[in-house]
Image 1 (cartoon, one colour):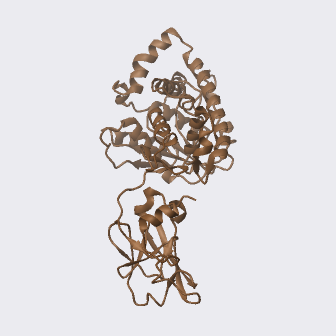
Image 2 (cartoon, rainbow, N blue to C red):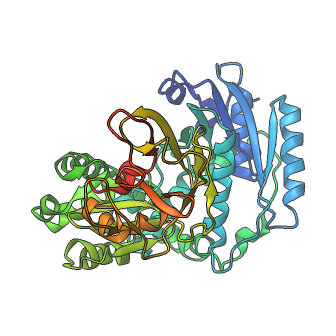
Image 3 (cartoon, helix red, strand yellow):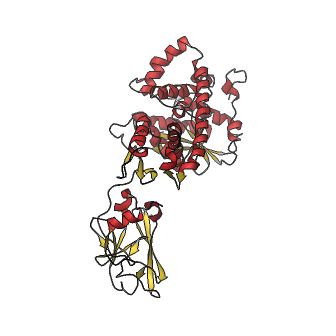
Length: 451
């Protein structure tokens, strides 16, 4: 237990201020790596567990990057057993992609695994401390980050299924180490922390000691600077959300309204928009490409700017943002029993029984119904037109987004194109006024059309 005469501020630590901010949270997950920082957090959880109303579970993620990682998992399991705390181990069963940053890849995979086992509203505690925060600031500054990047790590952050909490963010590494020694804690040393080929390790081992020698209070000073950046970023987000209301249209941006604002506000809107869509933020290079290739471009060829898993495209008067769209589409024809929904390419086709609209039941009796995607050159004679039109023409007239056109399902009767869902029915298969029919609906239609 804590030493009653200790002067270490962690000796009297209480989780109450944090937990009172999330009264609905039912469970707390505590990430433990076996290192000194997380072992301190684990001991604080143990020391306060009778006061914590939420259920607790410790989670260790084995990245498989070091030979000792399995031993670290065993160590964490034994620690939890001695504290009588439930323990879960997760394993990353993937190899590091070529050219990826080890740190970034491991962090992304770690949080993805943990959030998968969390329930809505759960809290995730990690042992990030003040030194981690200051290092993050310096790394962001060296990358040329703006206020959002320089604000570094927040105390609370929304994540999938819950809130990421950093309860030790205002305590420095020396305070954690002192607490660990006072309480005779044991932990595992990760020798890779001394490898200065990693930017954070180089900064921590070679640069930060020089700062500390010259400016001993640098942690407090940089922490104040970070707080200023967080205030600035918060204000930018507030203004961005207000501006977003002016220029947004069903999660898209209206280019005419966007262009009427200053470039600074336009940039801020882009960030607010992507944040609302929960998409990865762009760097300076891609922001510049968005302006030159999309916002200020006169091209009508649906240009695209992409990074990581994000794509931003322009079509006519709007900007669109989404995760990267799979380019390959199935070339096979799907047989379809109209009495049942057909799920293809993450969307669903449904045939509803109607009278006088859609596909004539009589005209397709005993016919083979199939669904295919565009190959090029397809034609259909709309039931309100005396001449055939190409699918390409109809898509242009209807404002079908160019990057979705090859993923727009076409319904065939035998080998003849009969229905473009939401667009038209071929006159040869169209139902008469009082005739029983099938009305074909596609769940992806609204997202494929510029409204």
